[in-house]
Structure formats: structure tokens, C-alpha cells
Length: 399
Figure (cartoon, one colour):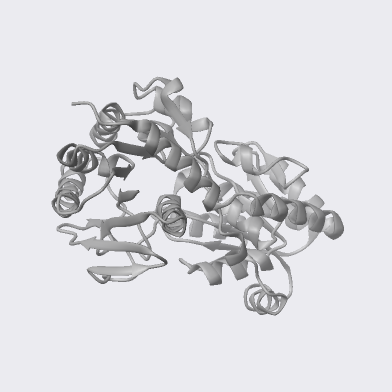
């Protein structure tokens, strides 16, 4: 099949799991013999540290990647009242995506999240092919149902439109079915296609792990968390658990890998509770894998997590994972089997779990080994086969 992906995130410009999901899926589709093109921004939409621009066109791992200019960038953090600024920037970039998409040929157009819904539908309609939409998260879910700003309401409405016009819709976890149903799509019409991990790429040599441990925490226990530094990721829960854990288990260092608007708040909280916290910034996959593997435990304390790819990546690296039982994390981390689980915001339970893991290295290694075996079965090849069946079942688009 000739497959055309439209996305606002693709390496090297990645802020969360969406870009990594599209990357993993596109590579697997190309490896399966499909003709895969990804259209993505040629620079970071958000004015944040990172690569400034990418080549206009390249072919990597069998995937043809076309880059469009970013007419307007968004400063972070984005103020809630900045509705017009955000929608203007997103609309301008969507126009660039559509302009380039209309010059391609495809058997299916696959759009990712609300930012590409309109351009995906426009391209699919012009080509008379199906448009498939993957909803990776929703504004209503991120805000726990509170659509109390003009920007939040505008995004929610755009999501509703995208879900309505798509010929087929996929979601990344069973938990997302209800969220998308609230946008007006019959839940029976949704296909759950969880994310995956390239497990061999996340395995870490013992020597590399030792170097990372020496670099980040040579003389005390090491706890790692990674992702966008935003409120919904729950990193404050981990920092608040440190004093109780230290009293029970001795000194620990917390390394937070990532960037985001919540970092100043986390810095202040770390100082307030007296936690030894290192902010490592964004790390490329090999560096992140080494850090995860070096940890005594990787903590994923999210309040909201549609899928939670970092938990799967941490398992693949051989780390013991402690995660909240929300969203897709509840499927990835089975308590006392492939990791440990706790309720979002439960500081005392998290401290107790981490204390148990640090006190029982052999038991912790057993959980890590079970998680690594489970992660090895979650392949992008399987995801690509499932998505292909969605494409073929989407049929021709309606008018």
C-alpha cells in the first residue's frame, strides 16, 4: 500500500509519545514492504531547546520523510488565553501539510491527533481514498473534563470534527475508548492499537549501564523518571515521596529526563522537600536507555497517560518499573508481575513500594526481568499488521 502519514511530531522534533509512535509504526510498515511517506514539520513548532531544522526530504529506514516549513512558532509555556495565537500557528502549519500532501499519491491518509485532522481529511478527499485518524490523547482527558478556557474548548471542538470526518479511528489504549466516545464516535467503531517498542534497540550493555550509573548516581540509590515536564505527568508525586523514602532506605538521587513548562515548579518543590534532584533535559534514545537501565527503579507517576510509552521502553531496557494504574499504564505494568502499581498522587504508597524494591534487590531484578520479557512481545511489526487491517477495512471515504 501507499501510506501517507501526517503528523505534527516526528524525530528529531518529539515532545511526547505521539512522535515516537508514528516513527515506530512508519518504520514497521516500510519493513513490511509498504510505500510509506511521512509529512512532518521541518522545525519544532514550539520555541524550545533542540534541533533548529531538518532536511526538506530524506529517506531513513525505508521511510520517505518530507518536511514543511513552520510559519509560526509557539513560545512555551502557552497561556490559556492564547487561543488565537495557538490556532493561527496550528492552522498555518496545517495548511503547509495539506499543500504538500496534495502533491502526493496514496492509498490511505493516516492523520495523527487534532492538529492534522483537517489537512488529513482534505488530502484524503482530494485523492478519493480513506482517511484514518489515530487519537493519541484528548483535551478533555488531559484536563480531567475541565474545558474552562477558550483554547481548551476550541481544541475539543476540533477533535470532535476530526473524529467525525475520519473513515476509521484508532486509539492507543482501551482507556482511550471512552474519551473518544465522548467526542461523538460510537465506541464499537473504534480500534485499539496499543503502542510498541523496538526492544533490541533499548537493551543496554552492562558496561554502558555501569558508565551511566557512575555518571548519574555513583554513591546512592537512583530513581529515574522521564517525559514532558508537565503537571499531568505527576512528577511532583515522586519528589514528595523522597523524604519518606530517604528516612526508610537512605539517600536517593532522582533524575528527571525531559523538558517542559512545569520544570520551575519541580525545581522549587525539590528544594522545598530537600530532594537530591538532577534535571537531565531531553536525552536521545541511546542516552535515555542507558539512564533507564542504570536506575534502581523507573517511576512513571502520571495523573493522565493515554498509553505511556516510556514505561514500555523502561521495561525493554531491563529496568524495574513503578507506575500509576491509569490509562495504558494499567495494561503495560501488571502489579507484582511486570512491575509495581500505585494510585495517582498516592505519595505514601509510592514511598513504600520504592522502599520495598530497594530493600529486595533480587525481587526487584525478578520484576525487571518479567517486564523485559513482556516488552519484547510488544513489537511494531504486530502494530503495523493491526493498522493495515484498519486501512483495508476503512473502504472508500464518504462525502
